[in-house]
Image (cartoon, rainbow, N blue to C red):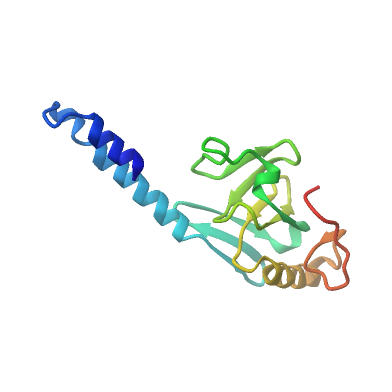
Length: 160
């Protein structure tokens, strides 16, 4: 909204017709970004973990999950204006390398390592979600080396 106000104040009222679309384009972009944020959902079924949002998302096969750990996006990667900028959600971390991010909250989330590219998600109840994900993954693979949802306590704190 601040960007929209700046554009409206900077552009004089009698500018050429070609500039009249700018505020509408910015408003449309902001509305689409808000819709993506609000549509973010996570679902675990019998075969997959699905992190979904409008125009993007990620599916992880439960049999491919290697680690389930608590993480903060702020600890993994730069999160300023440019750090988390990206439509698809592909990010890079000096701690773990490249990873996908389908999140709504940067401070409290889960880092799910599966295959070559881990995924960072932020469900409303990370502890409960980790327990349920862990239960379903253990039915496929048995216990994991790092698993914050395992009641047996076979987890290590923080990102790897």
